[in-house]
Every structure is written in C-alpha cells, then in structure tokens.
Length: 97
Image 1 (cartoon, rainbow, N blue to C red):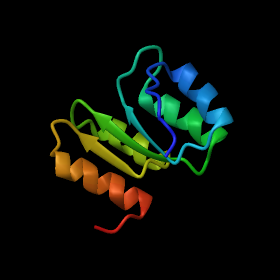
Image 2: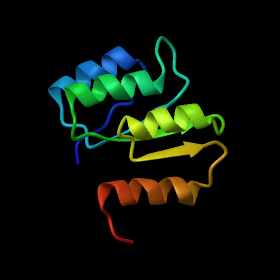
Image 3: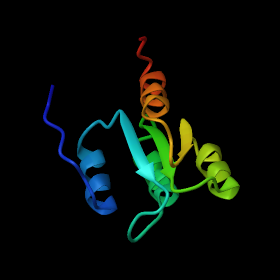
Image 4: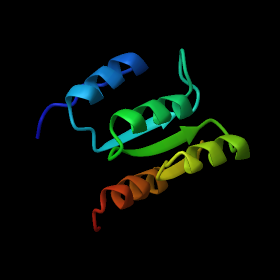
C-alpha cells in the first residue's frame, strides 16, 4: 500500500487528485478558504468517481441537503460515533465486515 500523505489545503488536495486516483475523500463542511461542499463540487468535476463523505460540526439541514444533492455518499454530524464513521467508510468502499 502506498504511503498516504495528509493534505490540509484544498488546492493542494485538488492538485494531488488531478495526478492520483483518490478513491475516498472525507471533507469537513467548515474549511479554510472554501467549504467542504465547494471542494466536493470541484472534486466531482475533476474526479467524478471519488466517493465523498462530508462531516460537519452540527446538523445543518441546508448543508446536509447540499452535500447529498451534490453526490456525497454520507453526511455525518459531529459528534458521531467512531463505529458510525467506520461503517460509512466501509460501506462507501464496498467492504464487507
């Protein structure tokens, strides 16, 4: 398995995604410079096969709707259970447990 580097800057991440296959991205709604929902839209244009899970600091129906309507696989509001998160990732990747 290739070493995965953590990308904290949206533009760096998009540059990375342009050159590398990104199977799954977990994006927070509230990010510096742009929202996770905006990043999701840009990522979808660049890499439509990338699965996106959006997380948020709270249950905002507008953000949930925007994320899911934009193609997000899941929207998880904090605090969420570790197992809920892991189950979402496993389900998104089609992994059986």
